[in-house]
Length: 95
Image 1 (cartoon, rainbow, N blue to C red):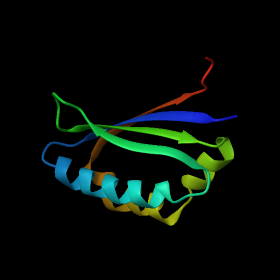
Image 2: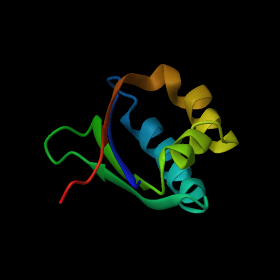
Image 3: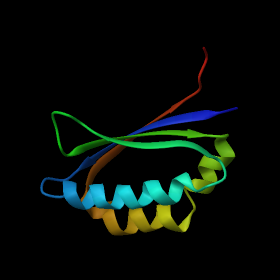
Image 4: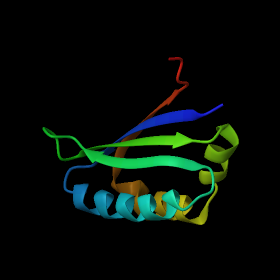
């Protein structure tokens, strides 16, 4: 079953540019994954510290694979301290 994930990523004060650069790198590598159907990065119009990643994966296994990739782990290692928080909303399309 296709899995949609909405990730709201909030950067610490003064770290938005660092987080954006890291997320842009993550987008490029993630889109090349076999199970990735959509991986789109957005920035909040009113709060430059808030990013929203809208992801769609072939299935839960593809998402799990993604979370173990070198590029995902690299983002966590290099940008983790710049993050205020990450909220994940896993969704299943029903209509």
